[in-house]
Amino acid sequence: MHSTAILSAFLLVLTTLGNASPSCRLRKYSARQQTFAHPGVLHTHEDLLRMRTNVASKLDPWYSTYQLFAEDSHSLLTYQMEGPLTWFERDHSGAVYGLNQIIQDGRAAINLALQYIITQNEAYAVASRNILDAWSETLKFVNGSDIQLGASLCGVNLVNATEILRWEWNGWAVGNITRFEGMIADIFYPAAGIQGINEYPWSGGWGTTGEKAIVAYGAFLSNSTMYQEGLCLYSNPSCGAACGNLGFMIENTGQYVESGRDQGHTQLSLGNMAEISQVALSQGDPSIYELLGERLRVGYEYTSEYQATNNTLPYNTTWVCCGCEDEGWTYVSSLDRTQIRPVREIVYGYYSGVKGVEMPYTKDVLSEGPETINPVNADNDNAEWGTLRFRRTSSL
Image (cartoon, rainbow, N blue to C red; front, side, top):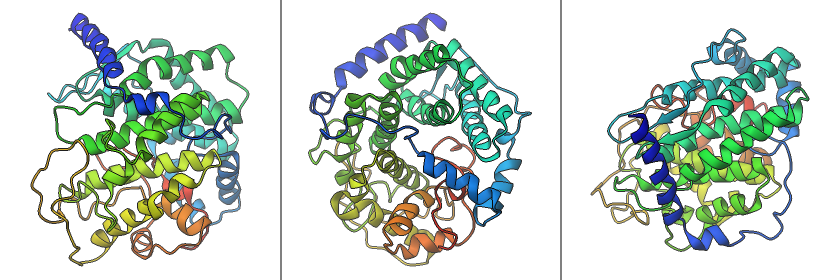
């Protein structure tokens, strides 16, 4: 099994390089993005300071959400690492060796890093660093037909934790940070960057998942080529190999390409696109949130209206993403209609909190309570604890 996995990993790298989109691999998205702000993935220094200040001042909703966050097992100094391992996989057959271990350790790494920011207790920073060091010292390769999802979703939490500790704490050896950077560049990025159309049909969500990882990895590594590649794949108006560009994901009515599949996968991909936009915002570029007349906001409102009301929404049966199979969906799916994922505070924080643009249906969903964790079996899909991390104002 071990030798087979190594061979598969090697072939995976070859496939990745072979399927790369030359137009996005080689072009620069924006000439002005040659330097990077740090911390600058999902959070800037100002974002982190807002969390700490509002919790210390016991201001809601940050303080009450923090009380829940602090009780999460991934936020505790008693958290027991589940890894590290030399490899992990995610495969269409159901093989997931090591996947849950890195998922849970990644959730702990980001939570503990945030705990350090909020409490200024260095024990949390040390605990987070130990997780990151252990994985970067041990992990050698990733494997499986679905590893684009595994490498993208798992890597983003690790990168966000490292970005916080590296720039907000001085207790991490430079050599260990460099080793972690190598793990992201040499193991996670190639797998996340698979841009060919997979033999399985859900390439729309796969595309946005890979893109959010590439953008995050590029910002973290201060790698302009990588960062601009991810933005190009997301914003390129042509039908490229990414299968996740915004114009092919969300119709101008707000319908998402998998709205007819279920609301769980729809929210996953909306959250992915929000994270892409948020990283760009952290780098001083709000234009990604503004693409196609704020198409992302329109998409959120469409899905939020469906989940917050009993309304029957218009559905275009011909709306199929570039490179995706036509599954024959004929109406908005009620599957997972009541499953509210923690993906809205991030966009509401920008459109409403920064720009003052109304998002009434998104607001209705958020008014039901604070964003906390992802649902079971999707616990690594998007950034958790959105109310604590992304809320800009005390009232909606």
